[in-house]
Image 1 (cartoon, rainbow, N blue to C red):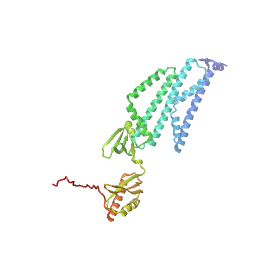
Image 2: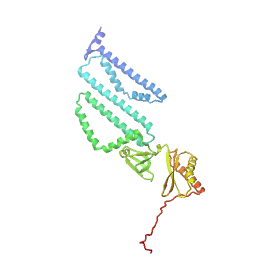
Image 3: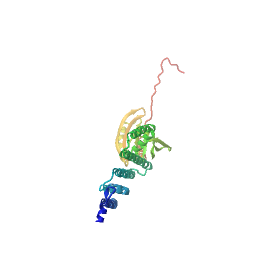
Length: 358
């Protein structure tokens, strides 16, 4: 009887039996959650090591980032439902729960952003430090935005009026954006370069009158090593506003060349030139003949225009093929005694009756 009376004695609005039952529920809930977290990390870790997908890796990362204080708060809320708490006590429990949930949400969100940044860096970084730096900067910006949202949510949960705060942040953000719009434009352009990949480090490109190779893509500028040797630095916003020719992605190169023959070349020899060009071009590796025609009678001679495609983007390969074509054409034209044309003008001088001989 004394033991029963002791268990039924009321302490802070609940009997000792209720307190013991709630304490047991707290211990059991915390133990089960801890075991479930540990088992999930181990089990998913084994599956993630065997799997080629990244979703299981993300699941392991999220579970691993679940903190002990969050499990304690969840277990405490389970126990709190089994007892009667005063209004001040419930307010304290609510405040602790809000803080714990928001902190844990921040940990999960940061882990998700970090996982996405790391995965994208491995997939699209291509060993480029500038690209990785841009992706990391986007990750930092995402984490900052996440914690700002969580802070505003916490203030709202505690009954603080955040209307003025949001308005102030909006006005301040607009003023800041106007003050640093050029920098922000370059940052967003860098992000566009990273995501859209119009070029990567090592690509030969042409921007307006600049020909060169991409050396570095930074947060604000891109550096190009020009063909003449100097380094050209262009802001990312200006670069994306220009027309960019990426020669590395060229699948084939169109080559056009002309032959100007002398005016006294016989018609049958001129008619044989296109077939001669076709045979010479088709004999070259990685060259596809397109056409050859006697197109014009110019002041420099009888013009034969020929077109072919080099099935390789390398300029040196094109130069080798064109050189081989030129040499073989020169040999065959010399063999057939066909002369090249040159600029010719005929000037007629007429003497009028009024002209006096000198």
